[in-house]
Image (cartoon, rainbow, N blue to C red; front, side):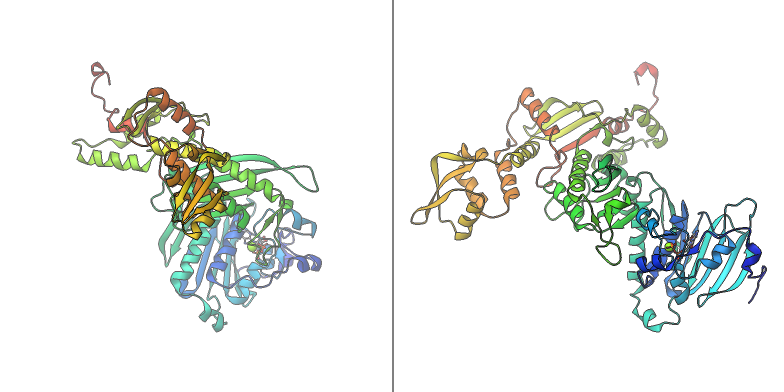
Length: 583
Ligand code: ADP
Ligand code: MG
């Protein structure tokens, strides 16, 4: 043994009992999961999970993919010298002891396999110091081929530094099987993003080849973290809702759970793939196809075509609510009381998408207005004093709460936009699409077909069109040569002069939802229609009460907000010119 400063004699440390213990066989049989280390990303994941389980709030990762080296440093609770010797033994963990503990797991790891597996396929060095004030010394242990070969005292802050190098050095097949570096790095970055979202209070520093690769600032809740991963998305483009619920349980009395939902506002951010619909349960990202579908369904007809929401759903519940046996890697789960969760998640989404005072921030509340202001400022003669402006904006910021906004119609512009005033600014609401949203939700709640007083005739329909109308329960019959008689129609269309045209439109395909969108669009007030104040106010009230007031069913934004904070900044209200000027 080289460089040994303290002998590798565990007996001499008996005064400090080891926290880590080797699990009894009956527990091992229950949890055996086999190989866990198959890539650099798997090494990073296991080390990072250990740091989080150790209560770390600061994690620094250094990567050198070329030398297959990973170093993870944390400020967690650290390990004693005894722990450092046991931790690489198979099935050695401080997180569970008995079979019973398996039903109450709150940590990310519990199998006691990761360090052992890593030590088998790589060189490993662990430096660690506990927070024990009576023993303020760090210990460094070097392991080779699964055995401790060197041990020394070391001056480090409380926490742990794990260095893994030469991964798969002795297993050329595995080494050659590793994907190209960019792919490995992408996998690592994605994994860190996921873990960071589940632990938003953690600070992350990630280096690649000694250079800063990316950092993640802590934020509570996950809303303050999520926007750091998405380009051109501000934290004000994302809404956060936290709901405490009481979950029904088959065996016991209801358990208290928490739903945390971080969701991109549909008028401000969405993706071209469903790659940011993520579900996590008890701090671990999981696949739950049913809940993912619930999110997609709840956001349907709020986004433009072929666009997908940004959503991070985090459930905190009793471990007994979760069945991990859906997938051997424990990444896909079944939730007991699934319909309950689906309903609660839909309700949380509806709450997040409502218009309330909450979504105003003391920063620019809306990117589009921000851009407008920047353009105006660039051409302006005077530079704005941002600190002063920020101060003033903060002072003018009103109390945040969940109460509904009181919106008052004050004028109509170009027979198209309703100018709406409220306590914190002015909105321009596009009358046609606001009405379209109102009608669409009414049709969703009550889609009624009514008999037509005089049947409508349609000509030259293709068999597919007839089939489509029948699918929508429309009563259609061949009436003559290439002529069909239609005897009923959606209520909203029945009285319209263009009922025949509308029916042809419905015959072109799509599901019931698309038919409802088409009907709403056709029946909504046209732009160019003059409205009086009462009509405008009625429309604003109905629109404000909708479930998804931000976008129309085609995904177009319905309103442009000019918040008081942005206006005061634009009009330079922070300038101190003189009291006599009334500023
Ligand atoms: P598991 O995480 O499943 O318990 P591991 O092999 O990953 O198994 O780790 C074994 C044990 O080593 C852990 O139970 C923990 O007690 C200890 N450990 C590992 N990494 C750290 C760390 N960064 N800080 C403190 N303790 C750690
Ligand atoms: Mg672990």
